[in-house]
Length: 131
Image (cartoon, rainbow, N blue to C red; front, side, top):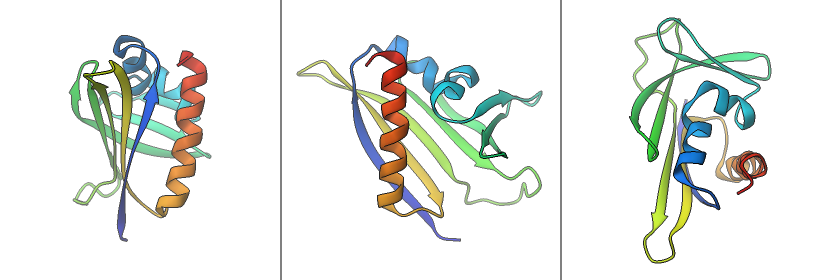
């Protein structure tokens, strides 16, 4: 299946320290991103969307700056072209404004659908953190 890379920036009016746990912890992600998120004994994240489980491992992490989740099929560990979601917190040096950069590399959606999905998700996140 063909993968699509979607990249978008969203202005967030909060601090890195407040925002980052919502991007990097199971409890934070469960508040705005998925129906539920848990971590199994192998330290893999399990994202629950619409009654389905999606497994991911943290591929890279830099506290208060960046986290990347690499999704995989636990029944097909030989697959190499994994979907991933990456969150980066970037700051405009001039204005001190924070931006959340979302990079979504996945299949099945076009840019217009992904833009709408992410707009709604980030809007919900902003409501939660007050940003």
